[in-house]
Image (spheres, rainbow, N blue to C red):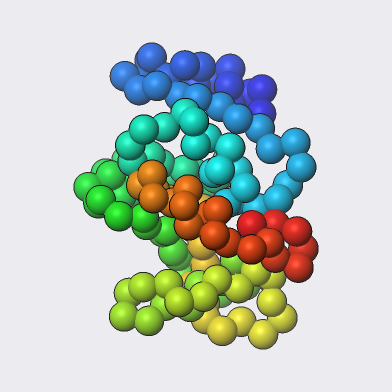
Length: 131
């Protein structure tokens, strides 16, 4: 956490504004996204802290104007959020299941519109307590 903040700082070096928030208790990505509701007023990117992202992927996402979750095809599905797609749309997200329904995993790179906050508010908690 501190290394990331130290390296990226406020984002001025890259001509962007970076705000940070830390989940004290791990309750899922949606819970973390909900924490920034008062900090954003338009579309925004969410990038998991344990992935590397290239500029091409970011440009592809920021050209969209709808909630978007990036996926990646994987061979090893252990401990991953797996995505069931139908006609290019997500129909279900499976978290850490024994028998994978697909080999498409959540890549940890998202573009959200402010409408995501309404969707999160209407989402019930998982059996593990996350949203």
